[in-house]
View 1: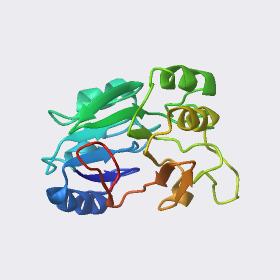
View 2 (view 1 turned 90 degrees about the horizontal axis):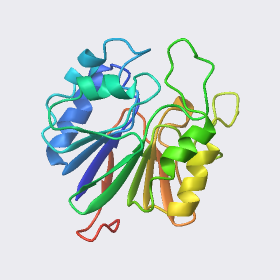
View 3 (view 1 turned 90 degrees about the vertical axis):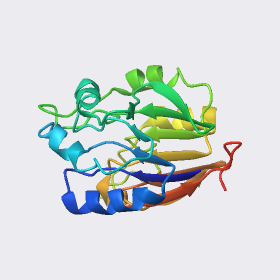
View 4 (view 1 turned 120 degrees about the horizontal axis):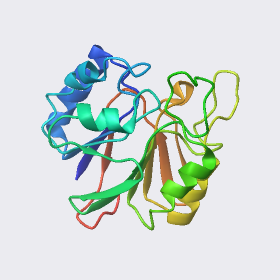
Length: 204
């Protein structure tokens, strides 16, 4: 299975064209949140992805709410926020929103660490964990070097040991990839990121 993943589209038509074109070779497409800006024009942002015909899995970022994303998502898309799904033998669990809470309280969709931990506790195992927010200390530093990731997400990775964690949110870390134990963690950004899984859910 060829998996195409991206995050933080932020209503960029240029980035969306690249992703849609790449999706023609994908068996699964994953969007790790922040499709629009400040909860505005979400339907128009998702319309930019209408050329994707592969199965599509989305988690809400802090720029869109869960119910808003479910209402605007393309027909057939799977929206995950504290839920799991299995596609082509690959087990996926998704957690949206910013964790921990951001300073952008007037519009941002955020979770306290305890609330995020409660949602992540629903997951016993996964091949792919999609988290809009990165784990604490990994691909999570802003331009001032401040670590903004989630302790709840990091604890879940240690407990579940997914093969792959896909995140975004911290723009300064787009493209960064590292490992925590056996788990590969990638802060995606609005580009075409490719991953491969075999029929048994193992990363190729």
